[in-house]
Amino acid sequence: MPWAVVLRMIARLAAVLFTWRLVTARRGAAAGGARRPIDRAKPPLGLHPRGGMASVREGASLVWRATAMVALVAVAALVITGGVTTVVLGPRWLGGALLGLALLVLAAAVAEGVALVRILTVRRKRRHDNQLRREV
Image (cartoon, rainbow, N blue to C red; front, side):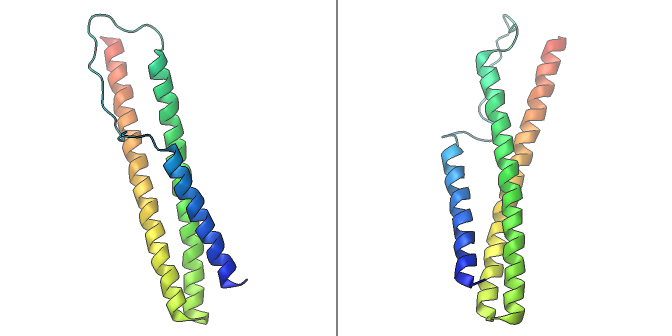
């Protein structure tokens, strides 16, 4: 397979992942988000519409982060394989460039993994807080 085709496929995959990330990102939102003050006067009954939408949004964010991380690890594996093969059999500069690209992709995968862990930690803490409030 010609190298131009392989590099074009990798570039297209990276462009699609980057575009999807930009489109689905919420503006001004952090991993934990700002919490509203607790209203102690009356406990909420049932599921609040904003809370329901927040849980749907949070679930979508979790799925996106996990999918992006898996895709980035898969791309990194492919680029590492191509880089090592090229270093051994072909021009070493191209193999080095591919291995450098693999390091960048792995760094992006680690960043997605860290964000995923943060979201899961905030979610677990919030659910624990809500459980404690219900017990009181």
